[in-house]
Length: 72
Image (cartoon, rainbow, N blue to C red; front, side, top):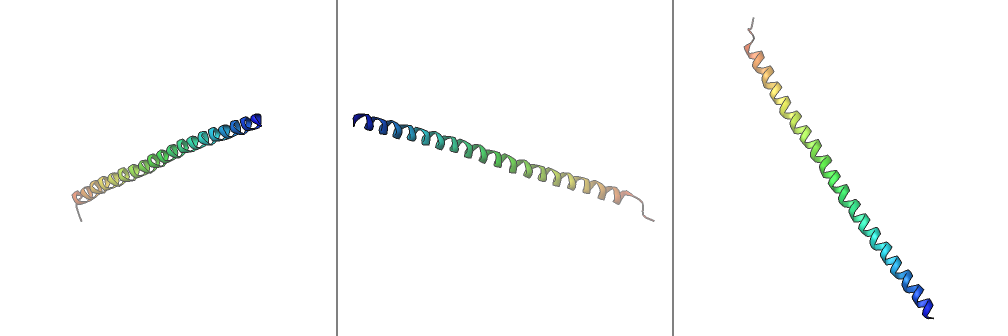
């Protein structure tokens, strides 16, 4: 009886340790995934903002160049 209780207790402790480890690992994976998504979205947003500023700058250059050309 004592051996049975000892084995059951050991299995319970082992299963608890495995569950705790799996939960910790899942938490780490979730944090890494969220950080990856945030960096990915920020990179896309940064590229879009930079492209929009470049397009606005080149549009100003073209419009100033067009306004300086002589008209017939």
